[in-house]
Length: 313
Image 1: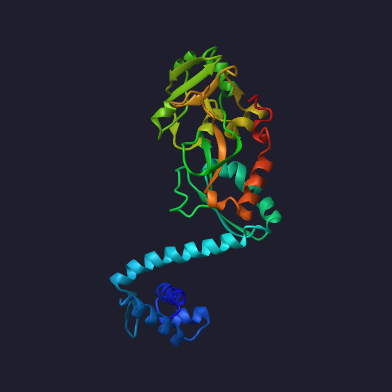
Image 2: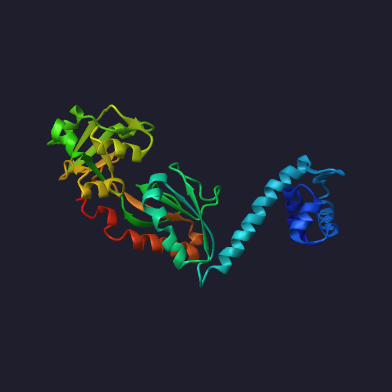
């Protein structure tokens, strides 16, 4: 028997809930699907489907086989697509994982331009601030911000990831401008609520490091909300240039302590190699659609990236 055809027939019947609807969707005779599934069950010496005049359901063995077969067929489809796209025109589905705020500000607005240049590519954007497993989540490219942990993934740096200390002109007029990092202990500092490390700010200058434990009246788990609160004059903010660069250039925020390199948490800013990276598996490096998307992002971000123009980074 054609084992692959039998597996696909079984998955189709299970997905559609019956032989007749599966046959209609595939445009084949119901008897053809029945023979293929019967042959698969005979090959496995296992009953995969409970069949009645009203419905078709999975047996316990069928449920287990279904989960495994879905992964096998998906992997096979991926392998076929990978071979087809090794050279030539970028085409097919590209799944990209991105941090939410960065995607909204710097990726979503330029997607139409990418698709105009690569009209045969389909994009699926998976927006999450939590790290994803590229294999389990079937991700082609993951955009990561900051310093990277050691892994077998290929990492291509698209842009630097620098944090700046800033505050609104109104806040500085009312509360004064710090002259050194230690002064921040007396200021209202806006921090993330989900990471205790965010309340430890590190600064470095000419080999000297200062660590400040900050506090403030507003914490949030959303970076754009903190930016809006800072623009409104509530407090000090330590955020990456991709989030606050345009506000600094426009005068809505002012850079504070510009002579100090700044970072958050345990990593010294002087030793960090923070960046905005595209991560992917080594076996995807020949993918035309992957290369096209990464090349596009790098070109559009620029060097230095456009969001640092006028920010004094």
